[in-house]
Length: 52
Image 1 (cartoon, helix red, strand yellow):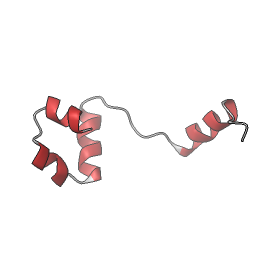
Image 2 (cartoon, one colour):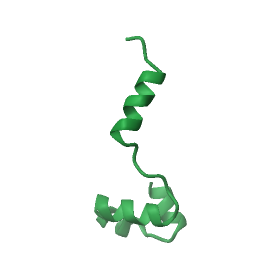
Image 3 (cartoon, rainbow, N blue to C red):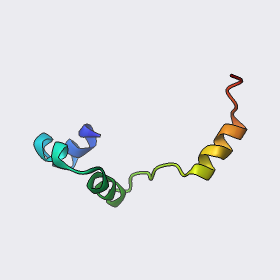
């Protein structure tokens, strides 16, 4: 995440002051991915059981 921030010009001190909400908004504006939803996680767990 810090690497992405540096690539877009966010300094390390500014990065560490970002709230999680601010980071997510910034990342989405850059075309970043959004977190996986619960339904997608359940489907993935069904499709790829770990056997444990």
